[in-house]
Amino acid sequence: MSLLFIVIAVVVVALIFDFTNGFHDSANSMAGPIATGALTARNAVIIAAVLNVVGAFLSTEVAKTISGGFFDERLVNPSMVLAGLVGAIVWNLLTWLLGIPSSSSHALFGGLIGAVVVGAGLTSVHGWVIVSKVLLPALAAPLVAGVAAALSTKIAYRITRRTPSGQTNTGFKYAQAFTASLVALAHGTSDGQKTMGVITLVLIAAGFQTAGSGPEVWVILAAGLAIGLGTYSGGWRIMRTLGKGIVDIDTPQGAASGAATAATILASSHLGFGLSTTHVATGGILGSGVGRDGAEVRWGLARKLVVAWLLTLPGAGIVGGLAALLAGSGVVGSVALLVLLAAVCVVIWLVSRRNQVTSRNVTDSADVMVLASASPSTYPEDPRLVTPRTRAKSKKKIKSGV
Amino acid sequence: MKIEWGALGVVAAVSIGMSVLFTILLAGGIRFVSAARSQRNRDGSGTAVLAGGYTLLGLATVLVLLGLWLIVPQLH
Image (cartoon, rainbow over all chains, first blue to last red; front, side):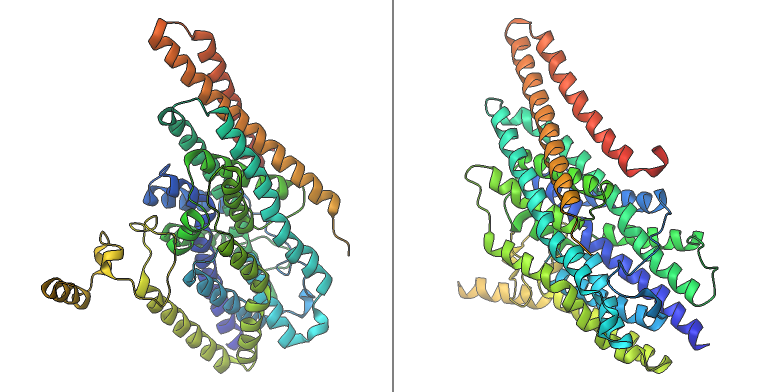
């Protein structure tokens, strides 16, 4: 009975993680097209969501390992997976609240590593693999995509410098929409499978599925829909950081960064050097700022993002480890963990409502605020931000002439 | 365990090369098509330039299709 409960809990929490993965990463493909107006915000997330779902169905060759070689997978039990997923979800939500595009895969690995360390000891973790598969790619991905985007941006402006901007914009916008769609499809084929892999592994470990078999149809369907729904919900806070926060993107920049992102993701996945989609997309946008003369790149924000990437593994690991302490104490501990997770989700959601970023105001500002109060005048076009209290305050100000 | 510097180098070279190639084809195509339209409006000529522009845009589309081919495992 307790095993069945843990398995059901893992399946549900894995699908929640998949949902957060979707909304966390929708910006990777669509932040650029939305920022330049190549696609409307709603159309962009619909396209990304559909392509993520299609991508999840395209390839059912689920990774044989969910550990990525970071730890000894034989030591993993369903409670540790549950704790690891909780660590990844909490990290994804926290970084979303702050508008930080961080890797969902690294969050998942971090959460699992933390849970395994608590459950099976520090010696079960392979430290060198972390250096070669997390730290090095986290530095290499933005560098490669950034150089590609910077060169491409320079070339795009150089070739079209005598062409009227009205005529170039249409062509670059079409190109941006196509390359963004490629990135969304590629994301669905890779990230959708991670959740399928987690669920399948737990079903096999619990004896509900034969060892060595692929994912059940319902698992593919559920994981595909979860990442699709997450993508559709937008993740607008991260969309703002990538689309407006790092650099103001013009259409040639958008096309160049889209081409660099798509080329880097496809080349890395087919040449056996897996790079995070998030890191590549961020590097592409940064590079497009470097490549355009006179563009203002906000390097302070870029530095913060790199720090957040390096903190993802230990951050999610600490939460995963703490969660493992609770989950390891049986059904009661697991129930308590789920209640805590729900509470954290609600608190983060409530805090995010203080300064909402939606499809309507995503391109209005470059900053993602968390605790500072946004007055209605900051986003006058978003009626959801005007509460009866703020409306009364505004009237009072008008009356008093402030 | 060692870092695969060779794989990283190949990824970097291919990524940068393909991105630059796509941008050259795209921007070149846009420029030629735009120039051809201006010529047509002026004196009715510009057919060859227009064809060249669409050829470049067609080649850029081929690169996008190559990307799609790489993503879909059933195609290769």
